[in-house]
Length: 125
Image (cartoon, rainbow, N blue to C red; front, side, top):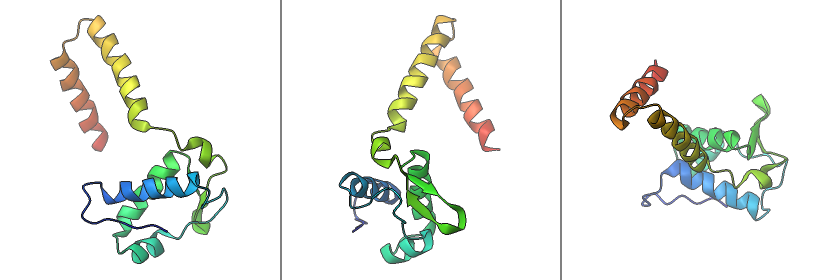
């Protein structure tokens, strides 16, 4: 059901996310259906387990999948409704609103950029 194009410019984890979302949208995957374990899907697709784990994490974040600990990952009950969530669109809106507030307070784009980079870097530690 899932095929990965190693020659595509699209990141492997994103190909996996999109294909799982399409399977939910076309009702090939139903709420409550179990997905293969990370290790199993990585083996089946000949991918690194970290790639599959990243895809599953993103799908959980978007509430398309839910993890049930040792039982595995399952299609969430509201998966169909959550397919349209776009984190990039949400971030764009949030950051645009914030940047406008900072500009209105007199901050320059350079100051905003520098502080943003400092905050992002501090979060990595």
